[in-house]
Length: 385
Image (cartoon, rainbow, N blue to C red; front, side, top):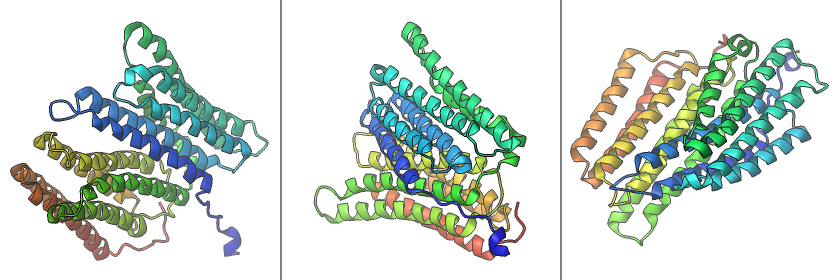
């Protein structure tokens, strides 16, 4: 009887992994913007373009993942929709350049068509023969309205840009995020995500993001073997390994993957967490270039670490057992981070010391997380949120 009543586990399908690979490619294209360095760092315009293109890419992935998690049924229409999006994402990737103005129409037309394609997938589901609850129908209508609203902003921005030069298309992303958060709160409670599937899908995307970091670290191995190059390549490798270990520990030992929650907060936290990881990959690239200002690249690296840890530890709300870390634990994390920032600020020109301090900081944060988790005996609980 227990086996009959147990809900069938939803697996992450191969098509989802193939689809996510295109996002790895387009994020890599976003990272190519760092090649444009002026006066010791990226220009403000290039940096803003880099941040916006990364967030736009992740917003598309966010919409797609929500649909697959709630309504994915492995249908031919869904597969076609995913492949159409993959094809259009190539055009967005091609339009991600330092001279983005020359590709503004290509980038935004592709983005608008992706949004329309995702809205059509919801409409197909709405008018299919399958039975849907009232909450499911309301949720579908809400998502269609959000996607069509985003697409409208994107397409309307094209003639405005042509006539005035104003770049308004990124407003579509902010509109979509705000509408998704504020709209239909009651509906979302009635239509929670399959949290086990969602956490697995998000974890795999994070793993793909670490793939970009692995590529960044590979540059430390170029130029032949010397003791200095071996030291820096080892330290860079330990940085990536340490970040991967702490995220893996959260996923395997801290996150309660079987709880019943809406899941939207979990995804939004990961959008910023993935962005932070991407920034760390870029920062590791910066550290190799002597022409980049030492102060700016260290500020960028340290702030990227802080953003990563802020959103990683925000995942505590989805933990087993104790969901609110105590004051001593928070104080230890904040104190360690402050000491790390102060040390880097004082020694920023001594690269050998700074990279060793970074490794020590990352592994100390990991050890603190493990000690706290074991001390509070985080175990699976019968009572779900």
